[in-house]
Each structure stands twice: as structure tokens, then as C-alpha cells.
Length: 98
Image (cartoon, rainbow, N blue to C red; front, side, top):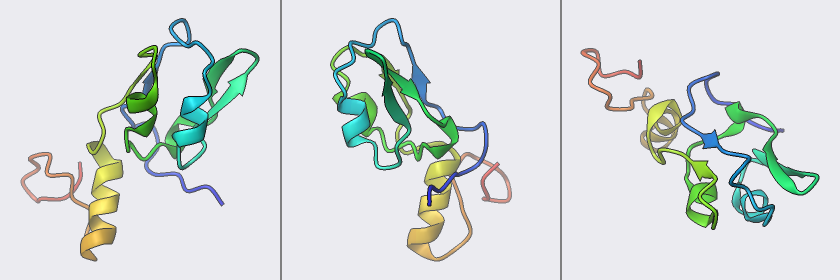
């Protein structure tokens, strides 16, 4: 079962024109966000991204950008680790994820 985080908040950006079809993003992504479609990568479901940054760090052509460890995905993970409510430290006055 694939776990989606919060819809339409992920910072993942992909430039198909820069993609060389090396397959590295499909191999390092723990949630299967990428697949090879023909000779280039394609995003299967952007909302599956947990913003770990593995894809961007391993993309030799710079086709992938993501702000690793930020946003609501990080908030959810922080909540799991601490056993508390999700918090992204985004400056909200109530301390919860925006």
C-alpha cells in the first residue's frame, strides 16, 4: 500500500527536458514516485513524495529538485518520531503544521 501525505504540498519539481533516463530516481525513491516512461523518467504520483531528497541527490543531470526535510512531509515524520502532533517549525503561532 502506498502512503500519500498531504495533497499538493510537496516541493518536488521535475524537468523532463533535462532527464537522461538513467533510472537512478526510480531506484532510490522509497515510495515509487518515479517510473521510466519510454526513455525518460516520469512522476507517477507527486503526492507520494516524502521529500527525502534521494532522487535529487542522485540525479546526474539536475532534472530533479526538492527541498528535502521541509514541508508537511517532514512534519508528519517528526510527529511519528516524537509521538506528538505534526510540526514543521514553519513559524505558525500555534506550532502546528500550516
